[in-house]
View 1 (spheres, rainbow, N blue to C red):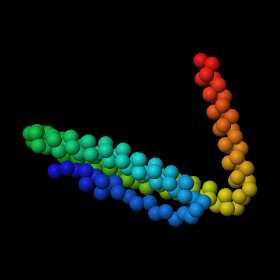
View 2 (view 1 turned 180 degrees about the vertical axis):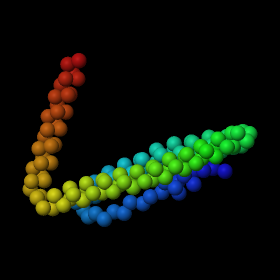
View 3 (view 1 turned 45 degrees about the vertical axis):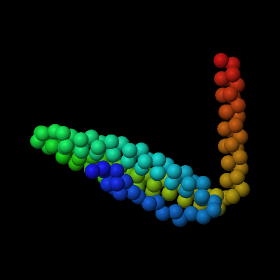
View 4 (view 1 turned 180 degrees about the horizontal axis):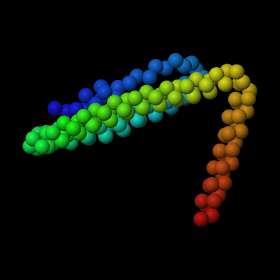
Length: 135
């Protein structure tokens, strides 16, 4: 019996999106980061669960006990991962909300800061491009 649906259900967390037009980009990035983390964790945990199931099918009593302990450890890992994912999503949501609030309070300053940051990144990119062409 495959554990993929079990793991997918355990990792399934839905982020609620309480944003408007100004925050769509950061919400999208947050959702993409959370989905990537869930996908990677799910793949790793599916592999671990598959190994545990294989041990149960082909091993003796000692392996079964070890498999049960490994299963409990995997479950503990899943619980810790879910908790950390929730904390990370809350942290990203808070940063996004604070940024959106700042942009609403000081739109001109926000645009100026974004323009300066973009100019600085382009200057850095140009310098790195020239340096790599010399080598």
